[in-house]
Image (cartoon, helix red, strand yellow):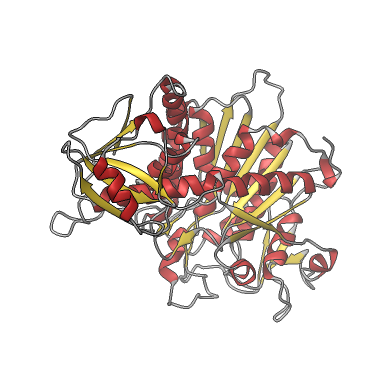
Length: 494
């Protein structure tokens, strides 16, 4: 759908007017003054999300859409998503709207964010339903607020939206297509945005000592990769780095600790964390954010075969610490252990944030509405949670504890990758394991998005499937430069 900004209502294009409690919303001087409109409005009993389509005496078609009340930016965006649904349910090739919010750019953000679907594998003989509306005209008079500023805001939002769509596309790709090799190839295309891209292949990973990562990958014919992306946006070469690390398991069978077959198809999305951090650096580079941002993505497939890692194996991580692998389905923490250590050694970042579909336990704890957040700095945690709330991505602060750390002690290695059966606290145990690979002085945040990385039904801002959860929050966090307002070890300053 193409969005156009225009100052005048066009009579030959159906007009959408928003209604709440019997009143038309929007700039009063632009609302058609028609007896038919007034009569229709007095008779309407719609209900939020409902609409009615009428024709007034001038020949203008008007669609009244009941938007209900709204209080937050996120709710306005959801109305934009509802508007997208309306546009595609009507058999009109073009529509025009009179913005009903003081923030029309947020309305259009929601509309454009919803305007994506995963349909590239449909053949001509079995297409998805046709998208009717190709053009949307936004009635926005420069004398009211300034159309150029709205146009600029839409273009800025378009960068974020396209990066979210890029992320969703990767999350939905089947695992026979999006292998570690293919994912890394997709990332090399980021060089056109000024991002430096390095792909480290298996032989180099072996010589460098990525034992934990390679142990997970050894059962698959698809060799492991480590993608390292750098955006140098700060004015000074000595400016501190912010580093994002994303879990990139392109398919997770569980390995020898095999997952149940029911629902295993969703494990193609076990690389959601990788797609999220890639989407963030893509948006940052296109918008030329004035900061140094690096991304480290370990890419593997956790397959089962005669060469697969076995429960009871002991691997040596990049940090030199040894790990007793008691459950091969707790593999995300193994590849992140090496990636986190590498990121600290290479970039010495001011802040490191990892994003991962790490534990099914986080969905048990929080349900499908919240992601888990852990870390070593309370102020940064709260800053991310605030950004998430504004973007409609909710996070709940979960605990780390020395008792959880002791639960990871092994009799025959430096640690084991799970706690003893029945211990519980699965999400905290996973985060605590990662903390063993965080240097004492390093400020670190862990986002467990396994509860929110995919939708089982359509949402107003996202169709069923991979959600891209986290891109908006992290990008907003970087935009606000809250990254640099916090010290190490959780001792925060303003």
